[in-house]
Image 1 (cartoon, helix red, strand yellow):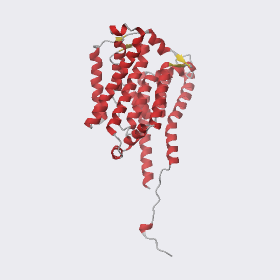
Image 2 (cartoon, helix red, strand yellow):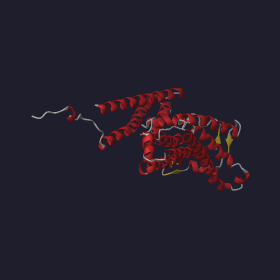
Image 3 (cartoon, rainbow, N blue to C red):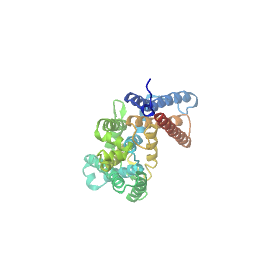
Image 4 (spheres, rainbow, N blue to C red):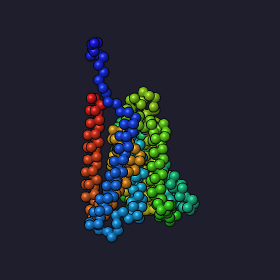
Length: 350
């Protein structure tokens, strides 16, 4: 009988296999869609007894309108997903949204733009989108070159960009209604509104970016371990700057989609958009610390929030109650995520 010395004893270590990781990922992403199903059932049943409207909650037109109303926050939230996977955050998206909207509408009142007629529309869109990209580039450059945390940088730029909004046209609304734009924004294709198609198109493109490109893989790597990403040869600074430009572009695109139909922007428009976007991203399972997240799950988070807002309104709840319920759900999700992560780490040590 041979002796077994301590150095020959190998303690079992639980490792996540690719299959286990994939299963965990599917469960995490499926949770938000299960929550949406629960919302639909709950508000449909509750609406039978408490509804302040004659329409059923799951009325087809009601659901199509819900998707359209999800677009402004949704487009921004999809961009926020990339930023948060990267381990950063952007608090300036609401101000970027408002400033891009002002550029869009005001530029169409310039004499030389008016002389172009409807041909000025693509130029106005382009100016608004370039504005968003430029503001995003400023954020990205500051985070890259100064090394200051993105939370602090974008908190400052949120205040600065909002100041530009008020300086641009005083405290007066900026208005310009172009009926060609209105017709475009209100049009439907295959039953879906223009804004819904923009939301779905952005979701598809960002999903491809994050799952099929080197840039997407690098985003996860940087968010998971920035130092290791640098040692692996990833150019972290330029990468993060590109992502800030993407979210700036998407904040401006959201403004273009919405204000093409609205035709009037107030200086306070877009306030709290950053908080709603972050809430949708977190509900979709993206980690605040970076390294994990899903564009598809964020889309589910956006729809879940809009369902809550619309469903609670359907049964007569006021705005304060809606915000309270969403806030409590967000806290519960963060607590549950923290507990699951702690449990997972303990299992890996045993």
